[in-house]
Amino acid sequence: MTAESGDAVAKEPPRRPPGNCLLFYPIPADDEPDTQAPPDAAHAPGADRRTHELPRPADRPRAHHESLVQERNTTMTSLNGATVLVTGANGGLGTELVKAALDRGARRVYATARSPKEWGDERVVPLRLDVADPEAVDRIARQAGDTTILINNAAVYPKGDLLTASAEDITTTIDTNLLGPIRLTQTLASALRSAKGALVNVGSVLGWLAIGKAHSVSKAGLWMATNAFRLELAPAGVQVLGVYAGPTDTPMQAGNDPAGMNKPSDVASAILDAVEAGDHELFVDELTTKVHTALSAPVTALYPALAQ
Ligand SMILES: NC(=O)c1ccc[n+]([C@@H]2O[C@H](COP(=O)([O-])OP(=O)(O)OC[C@H]3O[C@@H](n4cnc5c(N)ncnc54)[C@H](OP(=O)(O)O)[C@@H]3O)[C@@H](O)[C@H]2O)c1
Image 1 (cartoon, rainbow, N blue to C red):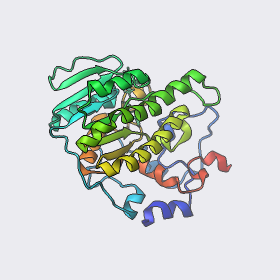
Image 2 (spheres, helix red, strand yellow):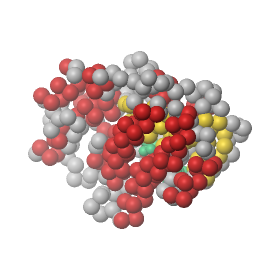
Image 3 (spheres, protein in one colour):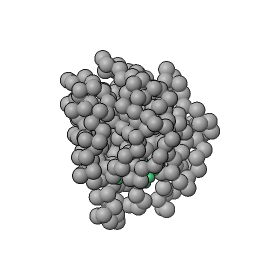
Image 4 (tube, rainbow, N blue to C red):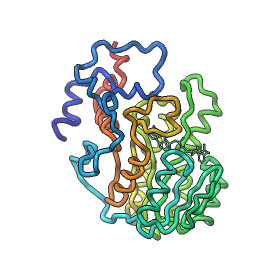
């Protein structure tokens, strides 16, 4: 473990969540400003980052565990000639993933969505898919059985607290963000095995930070499902990439100030770089890396209000 990663956090937990991530997500009305924020809070990721440029892959911060054991898949998955399936393809990141896959030479892209649209490119096959509908997911094995790279990208982010959320909202969130990707991976597992292809699950920093409430619950589950699939698919040579990102300028962030957010085209490019590099995990931004590192600190490191 390096000095600037887990060690440092464990000895002196930050008083604020790393990065001022709360700026980007709903802040509870009774949240008092932290007057004892460390002097470097103004330089936290997101606070002063006005550029939309993501670091190049070589400069991108790595997860602290990657410095312990830098292990990559022995197989790297090329996009050139691949058949890629993207869920939620009409969304902010989904659209950029479709475009980036085509730019890198994908042979075919299944652009799946609840309301599929024409893309004006013969390599794109629009398919109707509600990932929360198990029967629709089952049909995908017949419609897209030649998929070599599956990107579970679709998600919902309901507003409101977990204590008061309706059963319907919670069920929809878990169905869409967790059970959908699990079912789709099960459905296409044999295709991925035959191709020695790749599974990409788009998680979130909110899988480690409860301010996303039901969304956080679902993304925490997806994090572990991604690890379980990694273990189960590794013997067949299938790469499993978990993607974790902070605030990104897409419709999911509608109404929030986009300054300092990731650009979806940069995130899509970073995801495909990570696929082609054979990575297990992608921590898209510094905020995400810091929050992940803080998981090994006392819980008050991420939730300073609990320490008061
Ligand atoms: N934006 C961020 O700040 C951020 C940060 C970290 C991670 N992420 C993750 O990035 C991924 C992409 O999100 P985004 O930011 O691009 O948001 P977005 O623009 O809202 O896209 C989400 C897409 O998911 C689709 N979707 C929702 N429920 C679905 C269902 N049941 N079946 C099929 N598709 C469904 C939506 O389809 P409709 O068009 O039909 O509604 C939409 O196209 C998500 O996994 C999200 O959690 C986003």
